[in-house]
Length: 196
Image (cartoon, rainbow, N blue to C red; front, side):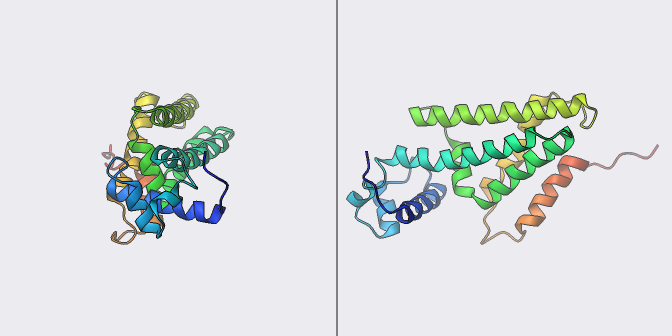
């Protein structure tokens, strides 16, 4: 169990770990690389975390807790179309603003205790969005010719792909433009309807 230490240093360590894992991948990154990136001796890291898996748990837990809180806010809405849009807007914004942590959540496989916990929370989150979509379909606000589970996966897939190509330093599109484009595709589709 790590000793109690300065929370600001822990936050700096977590931010550096998220960046390192985004670039190197969780499996490819080492504690030595992390120590070097924050200017500490490797042994000093263990005052903050017990190891790499502990880091993974801390990083993903925060991201998943934020997502769960916002999903609950969306679920509480009476208008199910708005609930769906709110849930997806949060997912877009969280991905754009916290690429490192979201990437870890999305890429984690259930091959460890922490990985299984992350994956199960992610599956539950998917089920909750599917339920919102199904309610919106039943209310007539969302097309019902696509199964809600499939529609949920397609929509989340579009948002999840952001972790592969979005880099705020290199992309010519700003966050607002990306958010609005994704929401436009969700709300309006991409192919114009043929005039009758």
